[in-house]
Image (cartoon, rainbow, N blue to C red):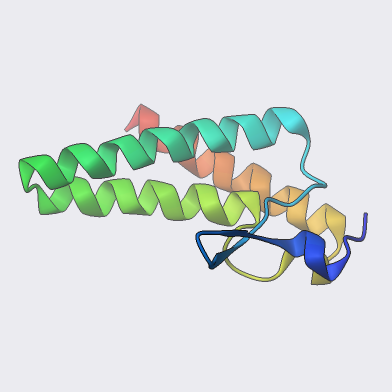
Length: 101
């Protein structure tokens, strides 16, 4: 699926954000969004607790999720769909492994 350039980003309060890769299967995207939400919550909690280690771990989780969703890293619209989906699956496996550790 090729998106139009305007479909690559959205704007909130004047700031441009990259959209999630639309080629990702919904179950993978939903799992990545769940990890992202948990990571965002963990960032808030770590900041309140002034816990630098927890903050770093939460930001790492967020980064993995955002890369998996295609919101960070190489521009998803310039890469083959199979590579993007494989990257999302790897990111999800890495995130799931964080929960087991």
